[in-house]
Length: 479
Image 1 (tube, rainbow, N blue to C red):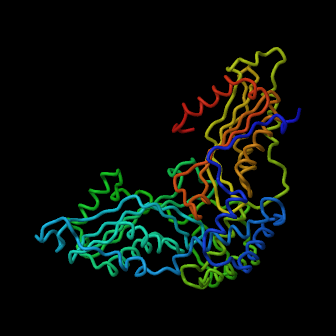
Image 2: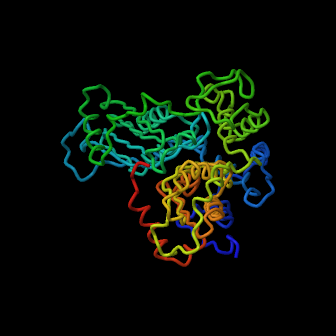
Image 3: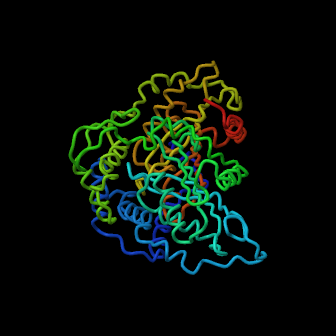
């Protein structure tokens, strides 16, 4: 029986990229129709990546990508006054004595507002935790939900974190006219694939930013001190910002920006450059510029200069190729995992594993990254020899560094390991999908787990349980 027939696949918290969901989102959104120009630009990107845009899995990708970008930049068409108007209420339930800063009540803080925005330097989404505080004035308060909605208006644009904080603060101050506004942001950007170390936000580039107005201004402001203290009650320390001063916010941001999108001198990026990057194809850069125009943006705006190149450079890291699987070292070591005929299949000491192998792939449905870790288990030879971890990491990199879906990647890795071990293989992939936070559903803290089980692991439930328990026992450990 072949590996495919023996495979047992299961997905937990699947990423929700199936056709039925997309149809529902398109029918229920009530937004404007997706333009053919933007979809044509996405098709040009797929062709530039060496893909066949007519193959199953990519046929509807242009429509999905166009929809995601339009939804993620809808803030350009929204106005703060339309949100706040009619949402100001008199303070009730307190006496008429004047309270802090002229208000009858105290400071109001809404914490842990989950948002996402698009990085204007590379056009990739980044996640945000936003905290907003204000001191009412004139005996008026604003509906709490409006604070998060105003923040979302400015997040749904191409942004950088500090400008986002400034715009939210300024808009709230001018629209609700309080004694003062404080905005604090914690933002996380995905790093270059080769620098991604783990599946959690600890592997991302994090930064913190704040903006304040009115009574919150000044280093000795008691209102700001109270705001910071109320954040600390949730374990949020805005005074600790170790990443901002050390690491660049966008890992693809060049030190030298071309004079015009599509033209200019060769640029370098902060951090390591993948060999796949090379020169940036001008037709792909032009396609991204066309996408920006379709969204109503100006590709020649100062903050967007070079952004199409950087976005293409990111995509080119996942370019389809027909190179060898880079498993030469892996297959050369295959003898180390062959089983002796007389070995006891229930001997769990013969089970070898490599856990917490980091990866970054590109979702072929939305052209957005998903990242996490891969856990691999197989039956070893029993003589103490195992395959070197670096060979497994090369295997994971090969199947991950391309347009993928998590379910298929899990199966492919399992089949590659099974082709060498012959007795059995089990693979678990845990991943965070950026397409889950940057589309209509916006499931910020969701994660996806997939498992593929082949060979003896299908029938030996105790061996499978032992492998899974090993993942649990080593969670959080440095590998």
